[in-house]
Amino acid sequence: MNNIEQFPFLKWTYIENKTSKNLKKSKGKYLFFSKDRNRLINLAKEILVRYDLSHAKVSLFASSQNFFSLCIYDSEPKLINELRLYDSKKIKYGYWKSNTRTLIDQLKE
Image (cartoon, rainbow, N blue to C red; front, top):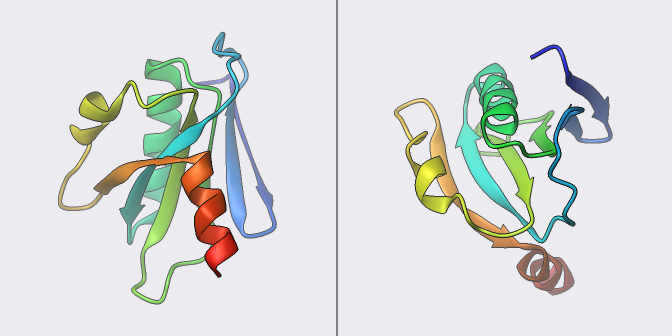
């Protein structure tokens, strides 16, 4: 995983797969949650390489329920079934959330 870079920016750690050939525009994200931030970072790196995805981000700070968030970006929700397999006691798979849904939720705030 030498071609994976990560860097903090604002409230997130961004993780990029520099060898990804997937150049399609992101239209949404797969969401994961865990109390173990490092576990989410490692999961992001694994998924980016395994499925040739370009980028993800992990929250720098836990929510009020002490959970960190992982967002893995993709051009469509084609990996929903595969990524559900990563659900475990330590990491919870959330769901696919489109960019449109995210924008609607932000406008409601």
